[in-house]
Image (cartoon, rainbow, N blue to C red; front, side):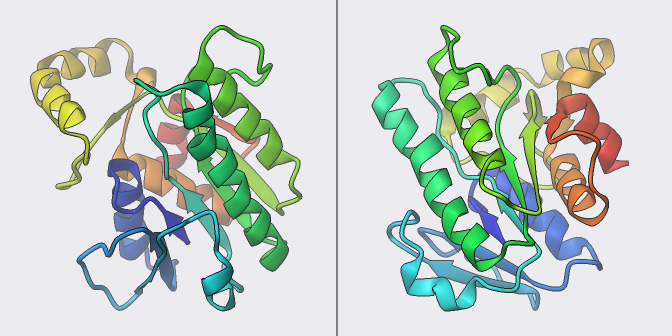
Length: 218
């Protein structure tokens, strides 16, 4: 099950799921159709992702949820950012753990997330609370992916115009960063591969850094 498959990270994760022979079926849940077809892929389109009641009959029996949905905190008040980053995520997770208590839940967080929930950075506090609350829900396993820089690959693009432009302009710098600090950069395909890995084989810690993402993807 993939949330946010129309975005850059979710699109990369979906690609890897469809390519992996060990993945039998994928359900994408989002607000709009993806505009693609694959024998493995089915979709549930909902105007309000916090309310899964209309599709609950389709949600049981899944081994994993890859929650890649998110927004930038730029220009958002803490209340606005919290509604999507924390409240929506937890609403989805509570439904899924009730229907699939043996599920593995994988959440895309971010490098620098603050699990003390007391730091000065608003986004880091909210992400930290989200991580903490997810780990308390009782999933069979839950992993908090904390990537730093994510390089889009294989035709995957960000839906945010500013991000697309930034990736183009900064691509020479990104190559240098990968050479000097490889543990700070990953890619959309590696994120997807690492997610599949933790579902199949687990990981030593619920918090998965960029370095660990790259290691697991191998």
